[in-house]
Length: 361
Image (cartoon, rainbow, N blue to C red; front, side, top):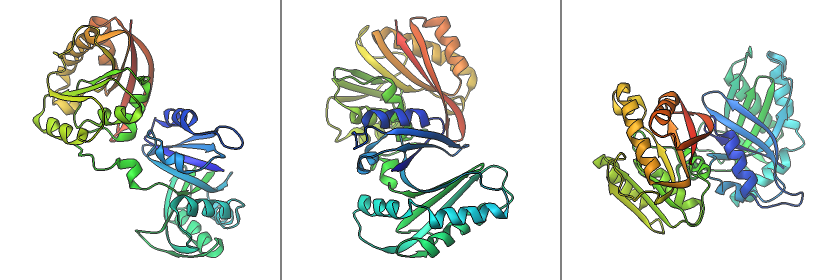
């Protein structure tokens, strides 16, 4: 069966790697990637074939939503003919009945109908409006889907997402709910990382059971929570200078199992011995966050010097940064023991950012 993972722009490939690594084998083996699609500035979509149960998909942490694909259409015309193509694909598609059944099984319901709503998105030079796309899909659902379905504006039993990327239509049913995206009752701050992004950063540190893991600028603690969820560890440490952040940090790690320590500290003077730490993941302040871009080179330089000091040889640093050039200049000038690795460009709150990987030589 064909599924789609939805995640933060730029995280599609990392979300796929997590699915490939974690999903149990089905009758036909492991999941098979069908393709990556982008809704610019909004989401990445990962399309893949999976023969196993759907519920394990809801445990993936680098994704924010899970869908089962009900219908696809290709070479969709950009005019009224395209709307007729979309209607036909969504009404008569061979996968409609099986995907509605999968939706019922995943949600644990037997209802043969109910309320539905359509979320329509389009990318390209279509001559029709987004609402026309939504109307074609909703008409197809009402006219041809198994059961009796009634269109509503909000709070529906079933969410149908119709994404038109240039000439390709992807019509999906949402299997996840808000809990997958928000991760329970975490207290967030204005600059807090979204959990899916934090989970992707944690995975890039290559978690191991004996890790001493540190987030030197922990904010509300999202990276700490995601590291605890990623698997066994020896110790997790996090801290921040802000009283508000430290309060949120204490609240968010309360109840997380394992040796988790939080402190008020300055990331440029950390309370660890040389080479004591295995992994560091950090959301480095952007210019707007600290109020003056002129201070970034100084902050990055002093922080990297300290990170090099506490990291063991072979240790990993994963940093999210808004100005990767400034970070590289700081590394080249003061922290050459950090060997640069892969970079991953993402969109964070509408702004371009980069996840940078480093290894301590």
